Image (cartoon, rainbow, N blue to C red; front, side):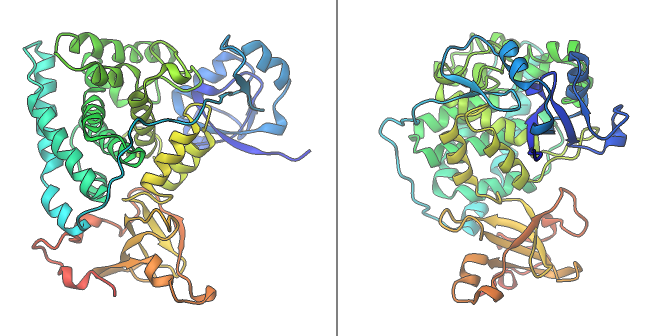
Length: 436
């Protein structure tokens, strides 16, 4: 029998599975051999302490049928377990009441120019809010709500601009960056689903506030997210309930609070704080949970494992359909952000390297790429934007230019902040950036 390797989140591991690969080098972990069977809950706890995901060999899983039966939660008859023991749950397709179809009404260049201070304003508003929460002062949510209203407007007009800005902007505080980027991913997904502007505001505000409970956790614990022992992880999970307690008298709508409370719940019931599943999780919380998980996979963090490339994170999300996230929600998210999301560092088939600027829903494999190196990977004095869909439109198959692979965060010579794609004054001229 052949071996089928599957990626799986570490919190979905079960005794009996064969771990064949990790999301970090083996020598950085306490595991003595490269590949082993999970024989106890201690093995699982050790993996949770060092990894976000692992690869398992399905064909080498021992006694999978018996283990699955023993470990299956009492969720009813709709759930079933895949070969690696993860519960799969099918629901009817998502139904959005009176969905809105949004048209892109401005250019990427114009919207980035209009919104380049927006994330900075959001960071300042969040910082002031978190400071007031820490000192238990009266919280004024109006500045945060005002920023979200502007972010929603930007995403409605041009969804790629805010994604670009959030991916290349440096933030000093991880909690702020995580909340902001989660909000942007969620808003872009909500736009794709056709949520009206009011719901988008609830979704974005809920995402910004979803991390507020982490102000009650130690800085050391937050710096080691993903590497916590079982007791520390149990304490870490309380941040959702702490956040809800801090916001209970804030006058927020039920829709916003549902995002804060439910963004760590999972489709198959494996989340927290309540372990609810399926259609018991509010739609906005489902979107927020998916966006937050995706941001966790790709965000660079000191002291933690190397982040996934966005393309690999998209692949992992696709594998999690009907397991941790509802299938049509995952597919809508991928349609919204693309196979190669905005901000992905890539190498083209001719050796040039650059960063994805935007994508087309019709040609998801052929996005617009800001090329920053030549074919030998030497940095260019001036970047140029190549629209792969237009470039390949009339070319023969042998001449088509495509993305060869996604590159790791921080790849040498690929710093997009050195190039100006907005047209504002800088040492690079915008007129030289456009490839026609």
